[in-house]
Amino acid sequence: MNHIEHLIKSLFIMASMVEARDPYTGGHLWRVSQYSRILAEYGGLPANIVARIALGGFLHDLGKISVPDAILNKAGKLTDEEYAVIKTHTEVGSRLLSDHPLADLARFAVIQHHETPDGLGYPQGLTNEQISADGSIVGICDAFDAMTSTRPYRKGMPVENALTIIQVNLGKQFHQEWGEKFIKLGEAGFLNHIVGHSETGIPLQQCPICGPTIVVSKHHQHGDHVFCRACGSEALVKKVGSNLAIEATGRHGAPSDLEPEVDNDLLAHLAQESSKHITINATHSKSFWH
Ligand SMILES: [Fe+2]
Image (tube, rainbow, N blue to C red; front, side):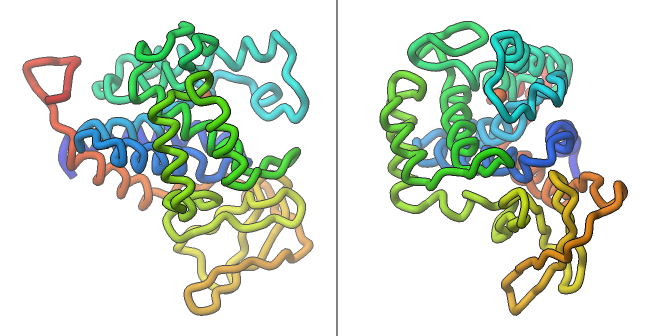
């Protein structure tokens, strides 16, 4: 592993630490990163920008580390004060990241993914082309994943419904052209292998209480036990051929069973893929892009 790959891996690990706090979002960062990469590629951006945007997709919510769980996971409507706290996460993320040697790669995605073309977004209320491709793309993909993912208090909506909402809000909440491209990808079925998955080929499994929140990795074997980190339910992994399924046991996991797991193989793979397209320009300490 070379120097740049180590640095990129450190970014992926930082992001996965933030995700480990939230038991409901299994695979959210991976999915946003994958959607963002596919959309950037489809839009014809060069490979180094595609890699940067995919990385930004994984890092976009870093600043949520500073938002209290009671606000982050609140089931009901947020008060104005609580929403104001949530809205700090873009600038906090950018600031926490700012001295990392590769901060420039993720900065636009982190700070601009809640900016909207109509100027009603945050933190700066930028409009249209003031928002970078990174911010526009990651913003669309983040919203799509939020809409299609199940939370304990609401079921994820079907892909078609989420695409309709993007369509209705083109040029308002979502960048017109990037939104149109995303809709085309969605309608063609090119996103279906990511929706509801936590990794390539690994769909989230259904917890009988919380919905599709149980992460099963490709390392799990037939007969292993897995746990819903949201409610603590235990389930048994069943592997029939290449198909994975789980069956509730009716038992609850101990605290040690509910600890977050980091998929180091996945992070290593993502870092390796990104590093193929990222080079350091030693003469420009803060600008690594050629
Ligand atoms: Fe966010």
